[in-house]
Each structure stands twice: as structure tokens, then as C-alpha cells.
Length: 160
Image (cartoon, rainbow, N blue to C red; front, side, top):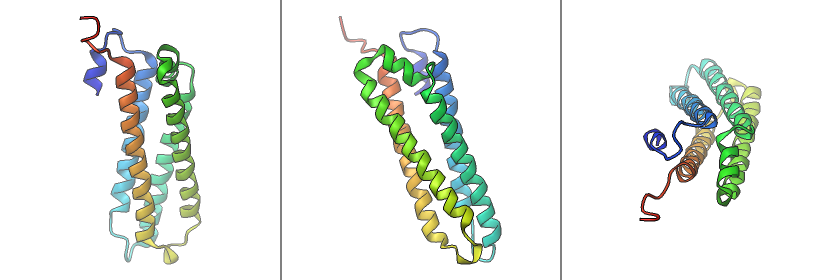
């Protein structure tokens, strides 16, 4: 997608688009770290495993919070799209809402994980919940990529 955006008809990349790219990279990196630690062995090392999961989940929560805050900024790519492509405004609102819901789900799970005792932890169940969050984040990233691509590129066949 990055190459496509750099070849758009708008010339230099808007500030909000670069921020969006960095935010998406940060949240994906945090998700990858969370998947790495949750995929490690837990039996016999539940205390360390839970500590690692808590840290990775807090990092993902912070990354999503920053991403959500930046997406609400008046200089964000989303705000640019709302202003420059009003036909896409409804999708921007939906994505902001969905990212907000995902952030809230991560926050709620972090609260549960923070309160969990290592000896009573259902590792498989927690992994399943984290996998669902990862699936939702990937889904939203794809929708966001489609929206940005549509907003920042043109149909070269129009007007030929």
C-alpha cells in the first residue's frame, strides 16, 4: 500500500497520512509481540508468562490509544478524507467507532488479566480471546488500508 500512496496524484504525502502509517505499524508491532509471548509455553512458568502477557497487552493498549487519539486529530488522514472525500465520511466514522470498540475491548481484557492469579489462569481461554482481538485488529487495518487507498488514488481511466 505504501508504494501506491506515494504514487497518488496529490504529490507530497500529507502529514496525517505519515502519522497514520506510523500508528498502524506501532499497533501491529505490539500485536506481534503479544502473539509471540502468548504463544510461548505457559505450563510451569505461569507467573512469568502472565507478566509477559500483561506487559505486551499494555503496550498494545497504549498503541491503540495513541492511534485512536491521532485519528481524531483535525490533521489526521481520517479528517483529511472526511473533508476532501465526503462520500467516504461514513466509513471514516465507522472505522473510528470500530477502533474505539477494539481499544475498549483490549482495555477490558487487560483489566481482567491484571487481576488474574497465575495459578487460576486458563491459558487456552486467554489465548483465544487475544486471538479474537488480533483478528479484529487485522480486519480494521484492512478496511483502513482500503479506505486510504480509495481516498488518495484516482481512477486513471476516468476522463480518457
